[in-house]
Image (cartoon, rainbow, N blue to C red; front, side):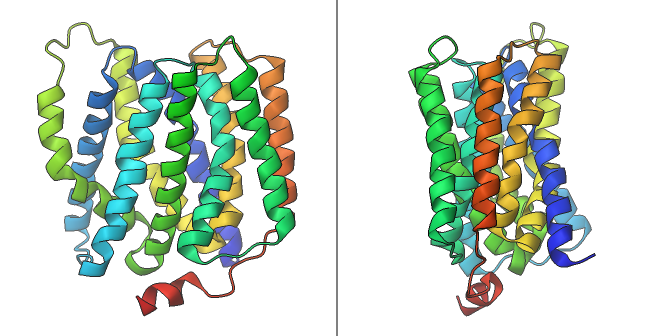
Length: 300
């Protein structure tokens, strides 16, 4: 099995895990404050990540790695979880999931800016068409849409794409699971105090679905999923493997329908299908970077 194939397999496993994030977050914010949910999930995952780093005696990042790790923490430890939790107070998870269709484009853009990847013009044309379909649907689908919720989701996609691309760059130097682990550990001095400060005054009204959802987003969405995802991005290329994110809306919609009993209309499904076709076409015209990411990192 070649490296690229391994990258696609690892990336697919990461997407499967991430697909449950928005439905789980939707269940969690029913009983938890979004800010508490964000810091608590990061604190739990950070403690576990720190234990793993100590157990396997991983070397500490060098000084030049600290700022990129903080960028990863800003994008995927704090930014994406907080912004999606805020968005899910205004929109359903089924509606929010469609914004995941923008993640491949966001990741690819930051792959160019931060990873040095280059693609043919046709790649950007099809990617842009898919993005316009997603944003256009979100704007005109009035029943389930919310300007505030949609704005939070768009912001979450931007910071998440940045965190994905930056983490993929660091994976070549630090390792796959080590990147998200160090990012989580660096966030602990802020996350642990905030978790205690924002802890609900009473837990008796917190239902089991919210507690199970907190456990899922802490263990799987915040840590385990990134082990596979960053490995896949590093092995198969940021933009190439990043296209797998277009499968996430379908898995997420299925979960939203089965677990949350949210209505998934035919128009929502149709938009997702068209967006996937656009990104498949974009992938055909994707051209991998000229300068390997690893060499670029080693030069810094």
